[in-house]
Image (cartoon, rainbow, N blue to C red; front, side):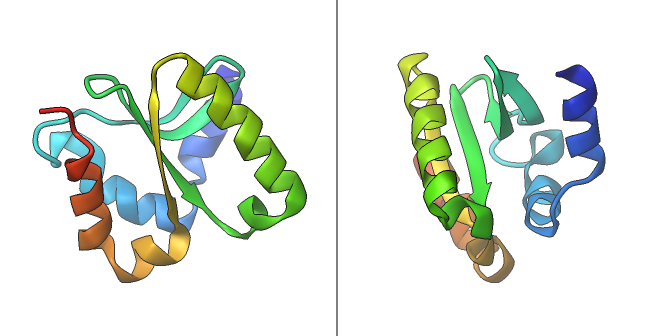
Amino acid sequence: MKSFRKELRNNLTPAEAILWSALKNKQLEGRKFRRQHSIGKYVADFYCPREKMIIELDGADHFTPAGIEHDEKRDNYIRGLGIKIIRFENNLVYNHLEEVLEEIKNNFRD
């Protein structure tokens, strides 16, 4: 899993790279985010341990029947661990990054 996560970190999608530039180095209200973080057998795009929150960016693959089914299973498992999941379509990151960041902040617990 470790080598797979490293490969994902080294090959971010364009949307992930844009969002990561806004999340890294505790830029968003001092919250530390990890990218490509393992949760059980799954890998989250971004994870904030303090908030127990995952941020997922969804491209076209997520809107196929197989993608929807996979995301549902994955989300049920992760929510069962008490971790919140927030999903954004890639287009929102490209065109409305500030709104995406506001939505993330609105989901912080304090």
